[in-house]
Image 1 (cartoon, rainbow, N blue to C red):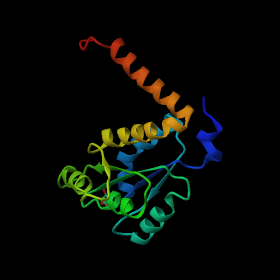
Image 2: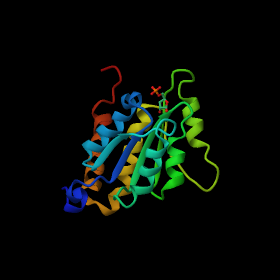
Image 3: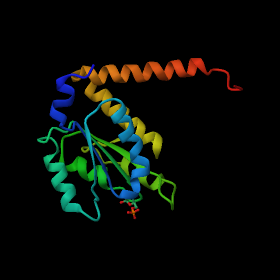
Length: 171
Ligand code: RP5
């Protein structure tokens, strides 16, 4: 069941941002999961390096625009999640994008090693991290949004059933 509060006239509850269009291959896994769970969201390219003013404006307006979580994906010297977190109280969920040079270890360390005071919840490198960040955002929203809670419970149940129905690895 999707309630009026869930959609709230289509106003996004989750901001999905990434440092480059080249991150979309990874971040689309978050978008797909949010879509499947009925979580209203938006997607934007916001670069810490190339568009710092846009980053500041996005973060500064995030709470007032109704965003309740920001999923931020970036690769390499991945400042985007930390810089967003520095400018908003909206929880930031960081997704390290797998870089070519260092396989995403650079992205992971850039995002996870925040000094005390400005937290960024950090997920696994790559597609799994993007997907899990979306599931985490849905779990954050679930207590206030029964439709999202229901969709999340259904996803978990289906996942469990799928393992049970395919438990013989030889088939
Ligand atoms: C980061 O630099 C982006 O998040 C991306 O992962 C990486 C490479 O960006 P492009 O050169 O592909 O635009 O800022």
